[in-house]
Amino acid sequence: MKSESQCSLATLSAFETDEEAVAFAVEGQRIMGVLHRPVDAAGPFPAVVVLHGFTGNKMASFRKFVILARRLARLGVATLRFDYRGCGESEGDAAFTSIESERADARAALLWVRNRPEINAARLGVVGVSLGGVIAIETMAEDEALKVGCLWAAVSRPALQLQIRATPELEKSLLERGYAEVDGWAVGRALVEQMAVMEPLAAAERLRGRRLLLLHGERDASVPLTSVWEYAQSLRAGGNEVDVHVIPEADHRYSRVVWQETIIQQTVDWFADQLGS
Image (cartoon, rainbow, N blue to C red; front, side, top):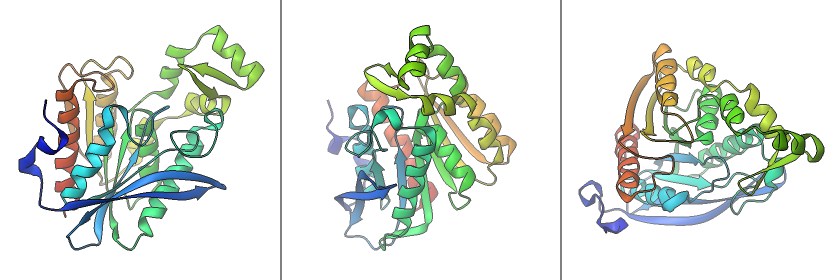
């Protein structure tokens, strides 16, 4: 099995990488993250902000975000990966996490990155994964300065995802306790209510003149493959430049090394081309 340092060596530059644990506050709660920067290279650098999915964290399964950020840094692109409030190492309670709180966290992360002296604030992109793809699209719709974005298995119809999960027991728990337990996580009423009315495809239609890379596993059982084509159609309707890649046989978590290598390297190559270094 190849190690991280052995994978796709032809795509890597001579840049070393520098990694810093960072924190910034939203509504008095600390958000924890890691900033990856190139070293032995002239800044300011373009940068990517990674928005993880539901119950995820700044590493992702199989350390995908760590590998992604290190490879981008070697090509001269900085990356901030962070935990939403109530997730990973950040402060907050998962039961109070909502779509609006995650949108606020994403805005704060982008503001923090833009204020860093080593970052070129005019050359930023976002990666959104699963439900984080919804946050990415909504953030791009309200932030015209974000010209490039990448979605991994992005949810296109949040209300439908809720219907798939809904049971009488979950609904009763939300009413009586204000949260329900889903796969060991406390999911609050606010998240459920906001997902029920969100329309990320409508947000995608509002984008103009952006460039997006859409990646999706062919056998994703959590977010249907139709989602990637719905996003592509909505984005292209606004005249955006859209590249779509379906990873053959891959599941939602990309749980084989070959799938992980594919999605990471396609993302790295695309951002290196779009943002330059």
